[in-house]
Image (cartoon, rainbow, N blue to C red; front, side, top):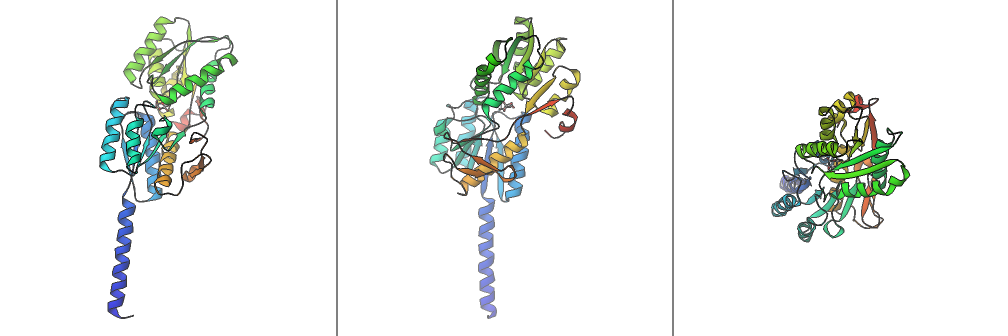
Length: 330
Ligand code: RAM
């Protein structure tokens, strides 16, 4: 080959490689969370970054409103559409309110999935549940009932009243309540995944229901705030705070006895899985349809049901026997 030809070939090769590198760098996946500043979502972002590093050429845009509102998320979604991201993976504050904005995103060719807290079917291509919703619903009641041999009053401290995930779990918990005779669910209140509001709601429950034996908070923000409220009220040993929490945030409560045990799935894995799914859909490696199997990297595959939903893994229970081991992880 002549020198000129060789130069031309290598120039063409270099151009092709540059083009490939440029297009690879182009993949932008937005992880939209219920609100910024929540440890659970920060752990999920770690998993998203891990997936991005594994895939190469993927930029994660971790974003969300400053408080847990659908309006705030709609603004964020509109900004992401304007920015031209390739995928939006959202944990929704309301299943319906965010759907029109997400539909607009899909109309513009953006891949849209929900994870953690779902979006109505028309507003997303698929939804990744952390675990089976029925299993989570049963788990949160069982965590309380297991430490109430004589039964008694329990109350739920949830996130927002429109939160898809908490509402499904509370529904599922209510369905299995008859399996726990003697356990009376006296109230469900909402702390909006805000630490101060959750704390005040927990105080309100203690004031209104003097015989309360457990506060069940299926939210990492709520369980932490409630354990603090119970501690500050001097009611450790009287009221057990349980539900879904992060070992890193709940270690003190377990140590003090305000919380005997609680559960959660791995939030890092959830962010990792949501990112892998988004990537495989936007690249056309998989299609979101009932029965489809979408690769989730080291987690395995998400197999979609008739609603285009899949579940990641089972929740795990933490207590004094294992919290030390996990508190530095998430
Ligand atoms: C909070 C959020 C999140 C939920 C966890 C358990 O961090 O409400 O959506 O999955 O709790």
